[in-house]
Amino acid sequence: MKVNAKLKNLRVAPRKSKIVADLIKGLDVLDALDQLEIHIKRTSPHVKKLLLSAIANAENNFGLDKNNLYVCEAKIGAGPTLKRWMPKAFGRAGEILKRTSNIEIILEERVEGKNRKSKEEMEAEFKKREKERKKEQKDAQEKQSDTEKKTGEIKKDEEKKKKEVPKKGWAKKIFQRKSM
Image (cartoon, rainbow, N blue to C red; front, side):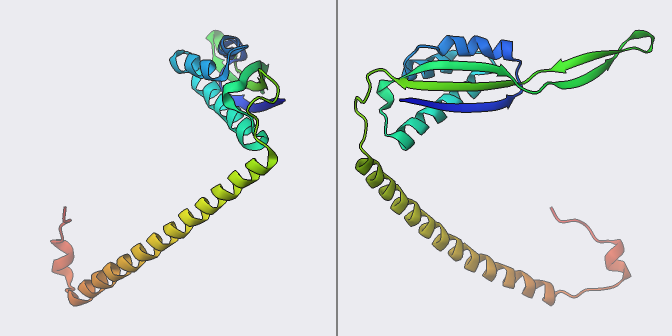
């Protein structure tokens, strides 16, 4: 089964991105991640993030095992080109082309169906994650309501202090200093 992920309009020229893509073609997913971790090209972190996204797609959507995946293809295409102008001698202008890349990574299984999860297992995991997510949201709402209560009390205290000191007059305005 093939799984893909796409990245569009990356602000790196396609010929520079192609070097990183060619580096990971045919490698196992974990080896490709290691290669991208130590590679120093500017595209590497973006391709690594895209590869992690493709792995997540494979695991969550299709129940594939990431130890059984490899990078089948890494396609690099040209995205839209930004056109800019640079002033030159004698009133001329030179064109500057700022190129962008479209990257697509396609993962495939080494051994078809090895360690693949069934639909029932995937649904059970999904329900478990959904319960955990709801519990976290409930906890976050409780914390937020507690902090709102505390901040409400603090604001009331500040308002009382402002009401207690109603000093007015032109001398106060002239000699007023900022407190630090």
